[in-house]
Image 1 (cartoon, each protein chain N blue to C red):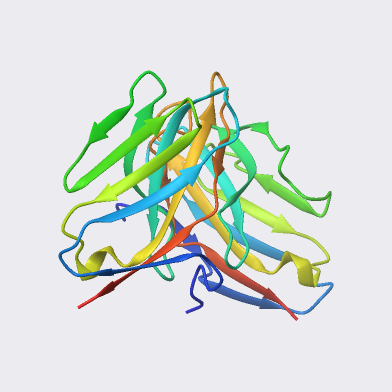
Image 2 (cartoon, helix red, strand yellow):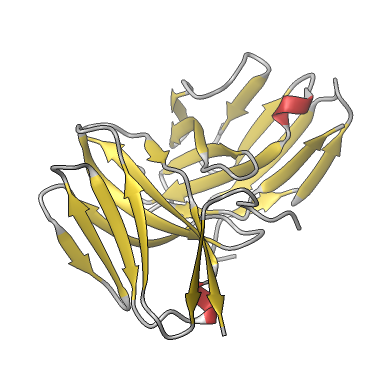
Length: 114
Length: 112
């Protein structure tokens, strides 16, 4: 497709379960970002990739969160041993260049941890 | 789907009127500012941007104003339409930084 694609659209997990969220950026986009958006809040930065290199993971809330982009295109955000406070919308965004100007966002994955 | 912004400040505006959305930023080192529109169930969508060496920029029906003295950003929407109903976020990037930081959002409701 022409835009950033995320799957699944919705994910319900039991507390303690591991989840994996997928992001397909726009073809050819160098930069890829993950954001977390709690209800009623603006998106919060999690991590940033330039091609396959993870250059900034300072926003990941704990070591239960892990992201990868092994071939510089598709990215996966993994959350281990999910907790209720992990419930949020996880947004992926990509851009042509090596910056986060003119980001294109996906529709997000809404994660609910019960 | 779940709606973004259930507890956000809300601006109600009559269709056809102009809308003004305000945002205060705290980081004087920020040099690039962006306004995003987020509709329910979707990701943020770029509207307009402005660099810190400018104080005004116009797009199609939208104008962004930047007042660096008081660290204030505003978005003006002319002739507001029902399709403008959404949550609007301002965002900033620090000089030489690579992290886009979002501010609190404002929900705009357009009344027919």
